[in-house]
Image (cartoon, rainbow, N blue to C red; front, side, top):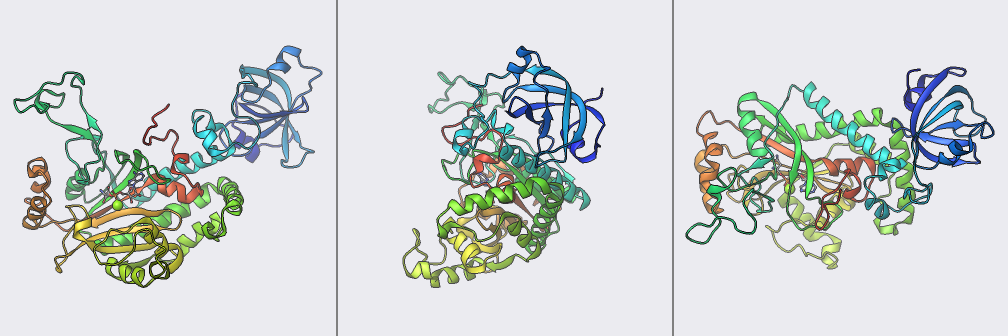
Length: 477
Ligand code: 4AD
Ligand code: MG
C-alpha cells in the first residue's frame, strides 16, 4: 500500500478508506491513542490501537519520539479535535525511542531549553509551524521576483571585498594557523594562501549583484551572509540569510515602491498558504503577550499585525524629519532614551526606531536620506552634500528589517568617497569599472530573511526562526 502523508489523509481521505502512513509519536495515552505527526501539517493523526491484540514487546516500543508506520482503516472519530482517526490494523516500529532519555516530552518546554536541543526541537508544534512558514516565505519570495521578471543570481560566498565596509568579517584561509608564512614586514603573506589574497565570508552579495543588474536589468540574490559582529541581541545572527534585489534604472523612490510591494505581496501569499500554522502561531503569540509587562505588549494579535502591514501604506519620511520628531518626543524630553537625541547626524538606535514605529506612527516606516557619515560608501550622494539616498524600513517589534539605497553611479563622486573613507580602491577595481562602462542610475536593498520570519511568526528571538543559529559563543550542531 502506498504511504500517504498525514496532511493528505486529513484533507482528502474519507471514512472507510484503507491507508498507510508513517511519522513520529507525539503522545501515547491510555495504551490506546497514538498522536502521530509527520511534519506535513500541524495536526497529528490520531491512531487507535487495540492493545490487547498487540504483542507486549511492540506495545513497549510505542513511545514518544519513536518512528512508526501505521496501516489501517479511517473511521469517524468520537473524540474531540479531529473528524477522522486511523483504526490501526498493522503497526511497524521503524525507529525506537527511549522515553526516559528523549528530551521532547509531551509538555510545554521553554524556548531556551529547546535551543539546546535544536536537532530535536523541530518535532514540536511550535518549531514545525515556524519552519513551515519559513519555507513558505522563501518560496513566496522566489515566486514574487519570478513574476516581476527578475533574474535570480548566485553571488559568491567567499569574497575579497567588504561590501559594508564595517570590517566585521570571518576570514577564510588555508594557511597554517600555527606558523603562517610571513612577509618581510612580519605580516601574514596571503600571496601564499589558497586564493593568493586575503578572503572572507561575504557580508552581502550587493556589489556583485550590482554588476549583474547592469546587464540583466533586474536581479536578486537570496543567500547566506556572515557578520562577525559581537551582537548578542534577539535580532542578530552571525550567519543569516538575505534577499538582495538590485535594479538598473531605478531611483530611490522606485526602490521604496518595490520594497513595499515585495513585503506586502509575500505576506499575502503566506497568509493563504500557511493559514493553519499562522492561526496556531497567532494563539501562541497571544498567550505570550499576556505574560509580558503591559508596556511591552504590542496590543495587536499576530494575524492582525500581518494584515495591518498588508493593508496600510508604509509611512515615508526623511531622517531629518525623524530627528525632529525624536528631539521633541516625550521620552527624549523626559530623558527616557538611553541615547538622547540632541543633534542631527547621530545614528538611530533601536529604541528610537521602535519609538517611531510603535509609538509615534504605529505602522511600518521608511526612513530615507540619511547623513552620509553613518552610511556605507556606495550610497548616492544628495546635492546637499551631507546626506545620501539611503532608505531603511522599520517594522513593529523588529526595528530595521530592510536596508537599501540608490547607488552612487558617478565615477568621480564614488572615487572621492572611497578615498575619504580610506577604503582600498584597488580591491574595488571591478566595481569602479561598472561606473566606467555604461553606468546608469540603479538601486537595491537587502531584506533580513530571519527578521521577516520573526515578524511573520511572532517569535521573539531570532535564534528560534533559523534551524541551527550561529551566534557569538555558539556554533553547536
Ligand atoms: O542594512 P544592511 O547591513 O544592508 C546591506 O547589507 C546592504 N548591502 C543591502 C543592500 O542594499 N543590498 O543589512 C540588510 C538587512 C538589515 O536590514 C537586517 O534586516 C538584516 O539585513 N541584517 C541582519 N539580520 C540578522 N542578523 C544580523 N547580524 C543582521 N545584519 C543585518
Ligand atoms: Mg542597515
